[in-house]
Amino acid sequence: MVSKGKDSLDRWEKVKSRTSRTHAVRESYNPIVPSKQANEGSQARGERAHRPEESGQERGLAKGNAEQSPTTGTQGPGQKVSRGLIGVRQAAERDRQLQFTALLHHITEQRLADSFRGLRRDAAVGVDEVSWEQYAQGLEGRLSDLHSRIHRGSYRAQPSRRTHIAKEDGQMRPLGISALEDKIVQAALSEVLNEIYEVDFMGFSYGFRPGRSKHQALDALWVGLVQQPINWVLDMDIKGFSDQVNHQWLIKFLRHRIGDERVIRLIIRMLKSGIMEDGLVKASERGTPQGSILSPLLSNVYLHYVLDLWFSHRVKLQARGEAYYFRFADDFLACFENQEDAWGFRQRLEDRLEGFGLQVAEDKTRIIEFGRFARERAYKRGAKPEEFTFLGFTHYCGKTKRGYFKVKRRTSRKKLGISLRNFTEWAKEARRVLRKGEMLRQARARVIGHLNYYAITDNAERCGYYVYRVKHILFKWLNRKSQRKAYTWQSFTQALIWVKWPDLRIRKDLNPCRRAEAH
Image (cartoon, rainbow, N blue to C red; front, top):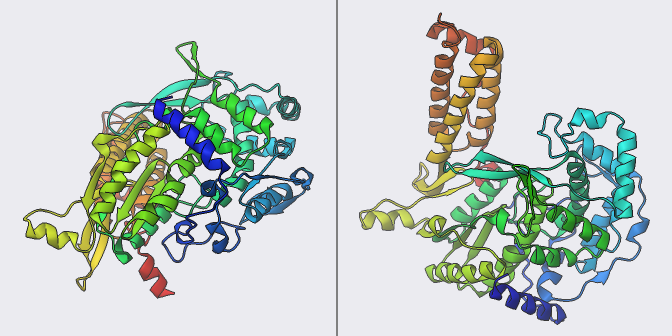
């Protein structure tokens, strides 16, 4: 760890000894979108103002949380949660300083079985080379043995098998494929820990959380840019976040809520299990393996303490004007009323990240003028108003029919190009192994998946272009299945009608104000 990291560790220990509770802000825990629902089972928002993470008070020990009943109840539509986990969530809500000393008993054979059934059956195998179907043979005995090893402390996570997939910029992204038993344990452990951290996580965090989505993040961002006095946007990226997570810091953050050392040891073993590549096992000294079921939760915990709390309790309060923050996993935006606040945050952020072993991606970081006055100011300078990309959409300044300011969004050029290239590669391979009818049906499913995300307000043009190009790509490769053409354009059009080709329409109205007026 860098020296700044060591200094930060010392500062953390000093902060923990303090008893004063400062900078408690109610608004910072609420999402901007008025219609957004609170986390299920949470208490009044006013209680969120009292957070021990920044006050530095020592957490009390959870008394009696081991006696939760194992019978099941329901929490949310179609989501079954044991009464024991409901009790964990309720205890976490009642006391924000509570440290849970007994959690491992919630990993039962039944929870392991449910985790196993929730895994993808066609997923790639790990270093154990055991598939879902193979593990299902003699499942009861396997899970009983796994449960026993977990609670005896003899369970050891196996190394993840390293593979690579293409990134948007043409580089290769490393992924770790866990062994099947490790996936089961990770899924069960993630379910238990989510009941605690869903209480702690803030409203402006949307990535990989139950009941939250990218569209909700875009909703909140729209309201923040349109209804709040925002003039400057900081578009930032963390360099190689998943590979740079400091294990020492992560465990410190986890211990703030988790006092069950058996669970801590289990997480450490998963983090230290290593990576197998080309037959060689490499130790894991830092980072959370991409592709792991538990990694998204651990990443959210890390950024919750490193960024979310800091912005809410420090940056927002010290800003001279309005300041808002939106995060989806490690992709985040900070919006400010004053330019000085934006530049000040930019300079402080670099030091903040460096203290926790992270770095700013300089080539992907910029501060742009954006808001209701940015369009007019840019035109006066003889320039175009600046744009930024977030969650696959390019955001730009526009106007309503009445001339009012409006944030508009279209599919980013990069994402559109990637989607079309992926569809082309799929069509090349599919024409060799699929019949014409099945190829048409699978192409339809791919188009529906694309439109379900990108067919939003103000994005009809880019979606229309995507559908137009996909039709021509599909027509081209269907006619290359043999020397004789499979379709004329007229018969191809009839075939699309036969498979119920999706119509081009807006699937998500991402205009929260208009939806509120309609109700």
